[in-house]
Length: 406
Image: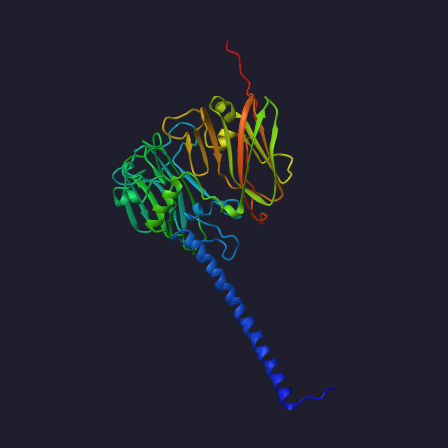
């Protein structure tokens, strides 16, 4: 055994003691440090949401579930699904097909008014549609506060009153903007109760809402955040990823009648953030009716099978409006463009479409398409976790048999 001076022996014992104390402190403080770092990350999400309280149904779960206006700031998280979470609906429509679509209200009020919506909190009313101005002015009770509004208070780009500022454009539309409907699409959170009623006999009404777990605090947003988000949504273009984390590519193809052409194959994990098609205006109708198919991760049956115009938000005919896009929404746009002396129709799809291993894009048309310019924007994306889901829109192809007239 090697000889050791007494002072060196005690110095070594003291060093070991200090090391043990440091280890104990590290074990005690490490959970607190992790919690603080996690809190800072959540605070960062809150700041991105410009004052909205980010709320998660599953605290500590990554990523959190964003509710209300916060969802507009994190549209790239649309693929993350909350297992067991469901939206609910309420309508006055006639379920028996007799067109008595104003008869199924909840209860009548003295003076001729009717209660259209009544739910206990906590919850979130995400959409409400009233027929024209029938039943107006409407009464909105939310957690003890009363807001009386009419169709003229909706859809104002620059609100002229305090009531109108509650529902700025495009989070609301009046009958002149929506061809006969009064719409509220602003997420309205409530902790205790929310009631929507009329002051006169009502017309057709339906609403979408969701219930939150008992005891949770719904997200709240100040008026300034509502105005900022309304301006952001009015641009009709969602926030795309930073340049450092995205990749863009384009190409061109010709589609022969009746043949399904694979024009794009991608490797993951990644997420498609933008898919754009441009065709000559003379071929816009034929292209809108063509079918886009997308197969994720080597699947044999595509998850997306739908006409291009359906994906872009057009359920009727394709035409060139004067002075405005045909479709101008948050996740899809159809608009006319010019390239030199040529008039084009552009279809922009901003649906977040993540995949883990691969993605295959196919196009099929019943008519010949001479020039289809396509482009995509790809962003890095982690592998889908448990509870995550790919973008899906399967529309069955039903044969239509035409019966000869007598």
